[in-house]
Amino acid sequence: MGKIEGSELVAQAIAKEGVDVLFGLPGGPIVEIMGFAPHHGVRPIGVRHEQAAAFSATAWGFVQNKVGVCVLAAGPAVTNAVTGAHVAYDNCMPLLLLGGSGPQGGRYSGTFQETENVPMFTNITKMAVQVDSAARIPYFMAMAFRTAKSGRPGPVYLDFPSDVLQEQVDEDQVDWPTGTFSGAPPAGNPESVKEAAELLLNAERPAMIIGKGVRWSEPTEELAQMVESLGMPFLTSPMGRGFIPDDHPMNMGSARSSIMRDADVILVVGARLNWMFDFGRRFAPDAKIIHIDIEPEEIGINRAVEVGIVGDAKVALQQILAEIEGKTEGMADKAEEGPWLNALREKAETNAKSLEPLMASDESPIRTYRLLSEIQSVFPRETIYTVDGQTTLATGRQVLSSHTPASRLNSASNGCMGVGVPFAVGAKLARPDVPVVSVNGDCAFGFNAMELETAVRHNLPIVFIVNNNSGIVGGNLESRMGLPEGYEERIAQFTPEIRYDKLIEAFGGHAENVTDPDEIRPALERAYAATLRGQVACVNVISEPMETMVTSSNRASALMGY
Ligand code: ADP
Image (cartoon, rainbow, N blue to C red; front, side, top):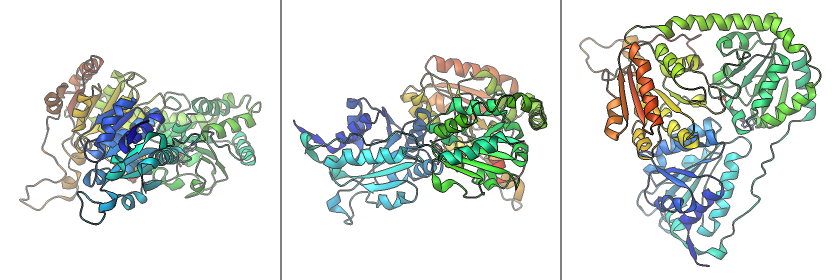
């Protein structure tokens, strides 16, 4: 047996985990990890900014149901990914960040790009530690993967001093740990399950809220059985969509205010009652909450629960289904004719109708609602959408539907702009077989627009759409607050009608620029056709700068599309 370098051990560990894609921007001291990767069946994706590396890895992990991995050179390359770690942490998504740092022997002596990386990540990861020797790399990597995907998933940061990566060790002295992860999903307490079943069987106005935490065990059949056997309407969080198809008749997403306000028993699965659900304050004070979450500390945080079930979503739902088996006969039919479902359906229909004129609008400049409605009708059912922005995000929530698990990605719990483009890169690598469409406001697009070049270089045929309203909500700041007389500089209004499509032309992809509503559909069809030929497409759509969003209130959650 010969010698093996630390960097190669890292590449091997990634491959052993079944991760076959690695995101990063090559640079010392991690560049060799990227170099060794393809020798071990891991495809390195060279991005243009480390923030994008972390975002793309997170999206890849969400779509694949695995731990996405990114490598970060050192110093600024590592700090550039701090936002990525924060977004993964805030969204409870697994991610492994592998950062480089100076040699152990040179600490505090002013080595190149010297930083204390571990403390930077401590508060925004499940674990942040430094690896102390090449021989222990397999141990640290196993620990990192286990931590990222165990219980509530989240990001892990491993710091690699350059001498650890460059160290040569005898291959026969490297111990590859086995049996490092128990994949067995935890079951809920049987007593709590019984209580939950009892509440649901006796509810007059039951409802279910589905969050993106269901991603990790994908209980698609169990969720559908719950709503169908009990006649229970449901709504989802922004990324909890598609685990039951949006067009399921029990989906009352269009009547979310009513359902939250009027339900008497609410089953929350894989979602937190944080700002997005107004901390549970929108529920009736006497509504009984059943909360299933894998993280015990989540139960009862902002709103008293009647029953808390600590366990995996799929297992806990199976337990409840077993408990209600044989006791639900006629419930669904009764619900169909009952006042609860009818009132919600009426509300959902009225809300949907109020959007119809906006979606059909032939106004110029183009309305965002019209653009999104055309997108919805051009791309197939199984399309993965990444949606980013403010107007675009809010409107997207109302107009775009999702029908398959993990097919809707956006900034979700975090509200971070800039995720749309790199999330699409990660999603396409995870599911090359389905169309990936990235819909971005122009401000959001700007954060990571250079990743279009990454998409072209790595042959990732994605349709990128820029809803270009020339600024942040069309320059909301100037219009709301005014500016001193004679003050010419603009802050939230960008240069009007920028031709973002020229970017993809420069990179060698398919470009479309749209100014007239009637041009939207043909342009989208041409862009889609280009992706089917293997090209990356960018459609720049000049839209109404002052789009009026249809929101239930001015709460942050409503303005973010919720
Ligand atoms: P959303 O934004 O969709 O509402 P959140 O990110 O707020 O979702 O919440 C996801 C929740 O799902 C977290 O509290 C997390 O602990 C929980 N979770 C993660 N994995 C599982 C699982 N396998 N089973 C049940 N709950 C889970």
